[in-house]
Length: 226
Image 1 (cartoon, rainbow, N blue to C red):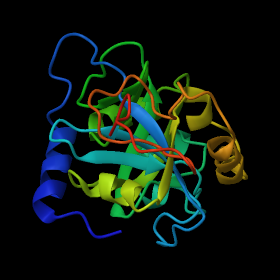
Image 2: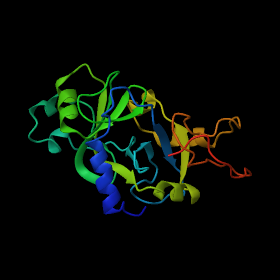
Image 3: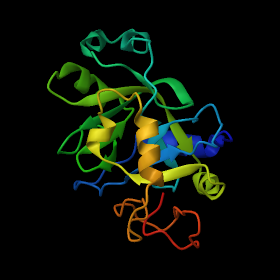
Image 4: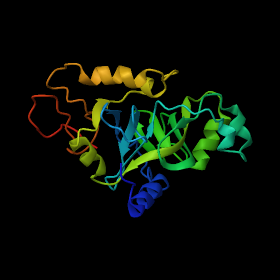
């Protein structure tokens, strides 16, 4: 995968600080990317990536199945509440690897900017949100080191080159306690026969940018895209 252009990366990071200014909840906007066996890029080989589309048509997300051995205190050494986090930190992707990103549940707008990925599920790198999560033992969330990012049109090119399967996303997969075997399981699900009305893309996405094809299928517009 080619590096995300600096201008697009800057726009993507800026969106983390500007999104969700509206007073009503934005619509869910998330899908799972499952790396096909032929995708050999070490950044994404055998990965499952939860992605969402930004306002400038870039795509950002986090890898769900790469837990790290490093404790959260290695990433947040000056945050006393970091010791409250008992889960593993996961490798979110190759962009800004030392920046902490959080996926968390909330039925209301977070106090600081965040992307609404699925109903009640948010993605953020804003320090205020992360501090609040660390201070609240009753919240369900997961922390990542860095994130994954694609410039506008870049992911579509990878899909056209047959690099990914596309599946609907759900909260239980995101917070699965053990991610061992996740890629193999979702790979089997992606290649299993399914009704023609199920194209493997979530209808919550606005736009018509990706289409998952199977052997023998003709290309047609997807009902939803990235």
